[in-house]
Image: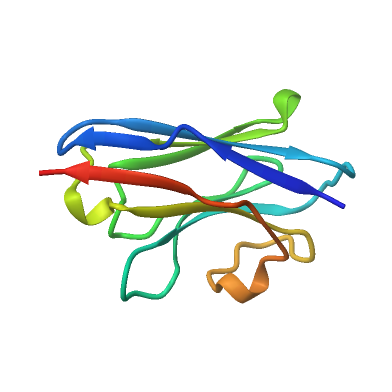
Length: 125
């Protein structure tokens, strides 16, 4: 059974930066997708970045393109989400998730079978 643990959230002023980390532990996987989702009040959980286990494929939606970057360090079983030029609308709970059944990036939260507890990111104006 895999587990994911997020870290790195907090409070930042608009225009600032944060780096979130997600460590995967448990059974060793290969050929999986790891993603970051964001949950804001009144909205559905949305994907903000995803990466294939190999690092060969990444995805960020237009809403964060140019500001958010996803990367991974397989030696540390860790995925990073670098967030720059943060805006108040980026405020929310950020979740790390694994899709162990697919080799391509899925956008729907229902496709992901392992979730972290979530970590709060607050951007003040």
